[in-house]
Amino acid sequence: MTIVISERALFMRIKRKLDRIYGQTLHTCRYDTRAFLEFGRYYAIDPYSGGLVDWYIDLNDMAQELGINATTPQPS
Figure 1 (cartoon, helix red, strand yellow):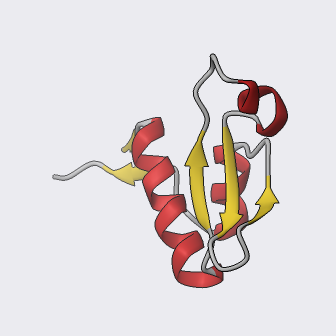
Figure 2 (spheres, rainbow, N blue to C red; figure 1 turned 120 degrees about the vertical axis):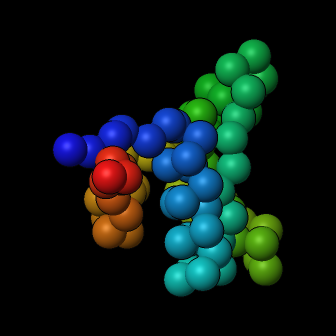
């Protein structure tokens, strides 16, 4: 049996993996900002160049690309 993890937990897993593999950071936009219309809810930047790497990120799709499991086994 599996337990589905929260959106925040999935966000943190993806953020750690992006930082470890590519050196990128994942950010969240607030809904009431102009940047939300430009970048979407989640976007990634390269902190070394300051450039935008990816925008309108879907967490579930990104988790699959990075090999992150969106569910966790239930402890027995």
